[in-house]
Length: 328
Image (tube, rainbow, N blue to C red; front, side, top):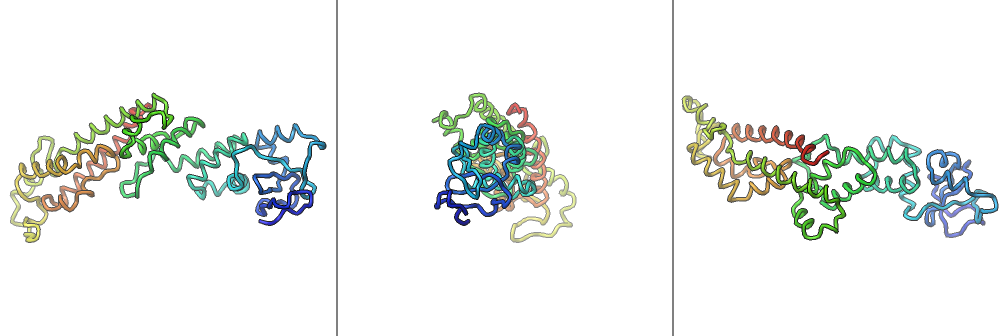
């Protein structure tokens, strides 16, 4: 950045050299930063600038820089947000390749709305949808999920600007967060969510919890009747397995009887809290991975992996069911 090159400008104003075109014919002022741009181009993509330029006359120019009239933007824009707006106009491939962070995408949508620029607004909605992709299930191995404040902000943004493809993920990220529904019940007005949205989220949370509990109560290596598949498969061929002295069982086979394993499973799932932990976030909560150390004492890897595969299939079905549960 350097000082604006005209004695007619305010000495404290700074020129954004990346968007200081030598053949520009107007200057846009954002706070204390100046952008030398092309009048026709801005008017062609922004209704705000089109109306601003159409209403001015030569006698209305109060200040100039490099012989170019200075125009102001609406309140609420910053040099950074306007710079990102110009960056998208100049190099839209940057947005396509995901160079804009989620925060920048939200800020850009706000900028495009203030400047009444439908092309950038539509472009940015697609970019924001990539951050809240409804077609991709939440990653079980990702870090800390988004906060419910982040999710609620996107829900309100999607409602205000009609952003497709983000509500499902945003709804789920909110309702799966510890404390969200309690905070919502305690002070519903603070979130500014429509009552219909709140009812949908409550209903989805209850139904997902029911599906998870029903699924999670079946122990690994058991059929629909609760009988041990592992014991049935291997009881006639025990002699071909080597003994694992550390785990005190045959390698490749669960230890103990079917009933004792079911009781131990219920102890882990119910008494140790896995049932409710999973009900809060059934799409992301991998019980086998979370409780691997405890489960490995009783179940063979094959039975645990089979249970995990069944959960993977179930969570895909639950994710699809969310469309109906949330009325999307």
